[in-house]
Length: 158
Image (tube, rainbow, N blue to C red; front, top):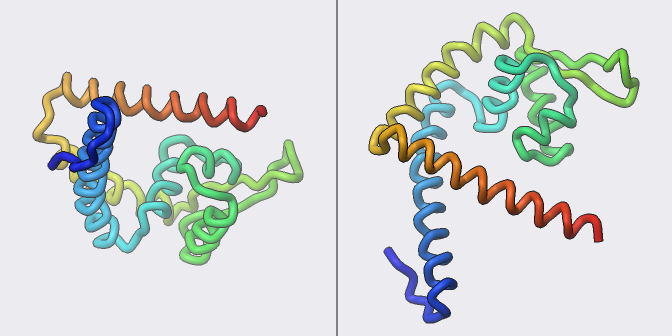
């Protein structure tokens, strides 16, 4: 569906692209959210556990940067994961101001099958694309995201 906005050609193209991008994101997101709901995790809880499973223990700040979550929201997510026995927090021996989060044995046992199921759902969601299209989509998304980060860094320096 195209926009009915009567702007410049580039405005119309960008708006149409945004609508398509956003609808695809929401559509795939619904499928993946349903899978997370089945396993009893929010997307953010899953993201934290997946990062810790594949990258190992790390400081709260790094986790937040990787999943694009504010520190206050991240603390709540970690609190809930810790309450359920999936993660533990320890003071960083190299920096007393920093907290290291790691998966517990239970966390490792739980995330492995959940990740496999999630990955299977992602593969199915992308099965309408061939390998080259998946690579191109990834490249374009990365370019768009990095461009925004660069622009934001420039604004923050002013």
